[in-house]
Image 1 (spheres, rainbow, N blue to C red):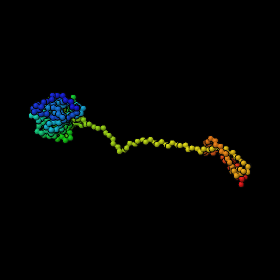
Image 2: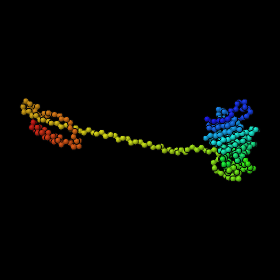
Image 3: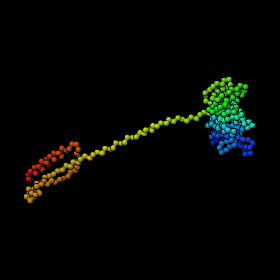
Image 4: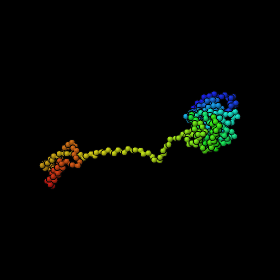
Length: 281
């Protein structure tokens, strides 16, 4: 929110004094006569506007604007005729963006008086430091010359459109072309690298399916006693071998290596079966 320090004018006073301009900023402060509005702060002649961390814009009532760079205090006054404007800074930087008719506005620093003499369209940056080093830079779109004069002397220097001049330690004789920054610093956004490559996402490998051990075949060992009946009445039943099986608990043996004992029993019972087959033919 804009911070303002000054005297609020009542409605009857407004008819006697019109605002010089209106300030638009989020962190600027105003000293002097002013009127708070819903859009901004209207300042009267003799007020001082100080920009905060961000540039402040003083939109002039007659048209155009003055950009006040961060940390700069700008005093503004209007002549008794209500046309020419007088600006003043002790240190800092401002930018003028407006058109002047058949008159001349002035911007004063502790060492120089800088005139915007019309008719012409001005887009000019002016900066000064506490040592008196003052820069005047013609910005894009500027069509008029700026006249720089010493406050304590009679010399003058004309800065033509498209030029930038640095005056060392408040003296015109030390004027030299310059390419140093003059005016409000540009706000640069951090560069962002844009790439069409989609970032790869590491996908964990799928776990290998758990191996299920195949059940080994169960081998059942059995004892098969042979019973032979010689009774003639039982010859019909004795024509076959009656094996009485007695189960024993299951015994798991190797799948790859069959039990030698089981193999031997198969051979033995095969031989016995063949013997009885021949016997009862």
